[in-house]
Amino acid sequence: MNSLDFDLETEWPELMKLLTPPQYFAIRRAIAAAWHEGWDPNLMDVELLVRYIRDEGELPLPAPIDGPETEYVFDTWDSYFQLGDLGLPVFINYYNETNPRLLQHKEFLAVCARSIELDLGLATIDPTFDAAHLQTIHYYLFGDVYPWAGRFRTVNMSKPGGVAFADCQNGEVERYLDDVHRIAVETPWYQLSGLQFVEKSAELFAYLNQAHPFREGNGRAAKTFMCAVAAGSPYDFDFMRVNPMVWNQASAGSSPEPFEYHPHPEALVPVFDAVTISR
Image (cartoon, rainbow, N blue to C red; front, side, top):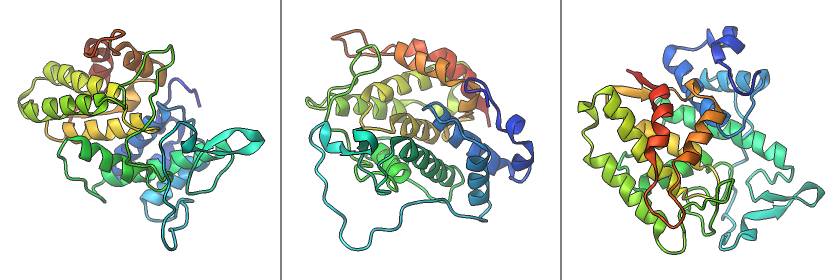
């Protein structure tokens, strides 16, 4: 598969024929979100997801916790990690997986499955569009994998190139998410023209992306949040219409200037124009 340009119907046409249109769009959107984070699924991965959607198989999820869950404290950079293979740090996880590549693969499959469930309405989350809404999304997507799922990060992070995400020590994360909530609830989404929808979506996502409230999984949680916003409009998102390089460049371009607060949503308008479709 070409890591910059692929389509499920082109790569695996026979598998896709087994799915109903809603099932196909759900798996397409879930895989696209993972693709933007570096996943390169193979035939076996897609077969597992198709069988799972059709209720013909199970994914290799961790066994349910038997008894009280270990109380983890995540208050330093190192507290999120365990010592993995070859002495490399690996996120603490419910699989007890110490190989970072294997953990990433299991994470992608598990999160895709949960994303598909939300897309198909097999699970629902109250669309309040506030910080709690985003935390619930993150917990649902990543709760099978990480004990810190749904919890805001306690360490600061930067983008490649050194531009910092919101400071989690001074309330900046919450301030960005307050702006996200304000934009989401004050915008008359169903009344917008296509161009207005694209521009407002880019604005909302720019603040959401700059908040980057979780230690991992921000992109996938944010895309799920955006789909919940779009549900109140005549439009939807097909994230596979933009390849990871273009998406990530646009996201980076939306960052605020150093020591400034407001992001630059205009950098995201071209990608949101590309991924926006009519219902």
